[in-house]
Length: 205
Image 1 (cartoon, rainbow, N blue to C red):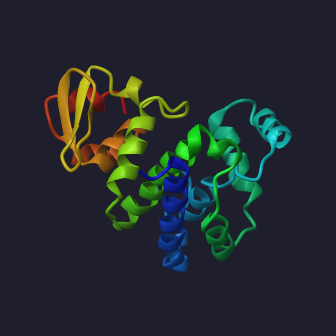
Image 2: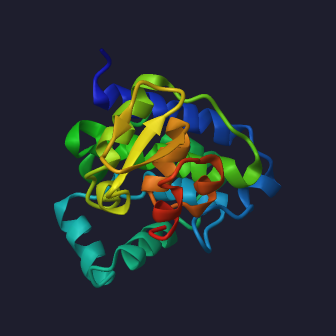
Image 3: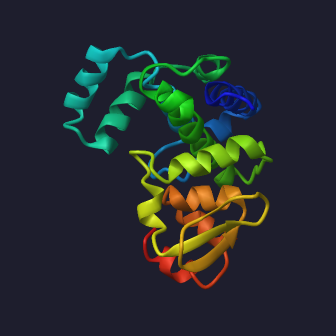
């Protein structure tokens, strides 16, 4: 079995390869993250890697402990990076600091979700490695910034393309990718889900 840290590195390598093939126009395209372009989402995935403990605390204080403000500061700090520089930051970089937490699961799950934040609006789907996707689905349930288990409470999620399920209640069926994006609060994923629990889930996203 691949270690979760290696999974995170593999995910980043695939993300970098994908970004490397985008046109300048696509780098400026909107994403599922409101107000963020492709370049903003891409740099966000590694914007915490270079921060030591003191620099991380400083960013949290500058953001007044608001996740949205903290993330926006991180993106702004790298606003002068070119697409090629952003790709280089992502490619073959081992998650460290905050993104290296939980054995790299933070980087794996965050990077996977954000790659889909970019791919879905561009209409560029991909096949995600099953082991990586199951690991991200499991972690997304209780990841501090996602708390997917709270969002999908009283529903039973069933992946139609993986051996993965979670929860008790009315069933919600869909691909593992769509279930992950739903747990992350992406309404765009609802179109790819079905089942008696979909309406309940829709009210929480």
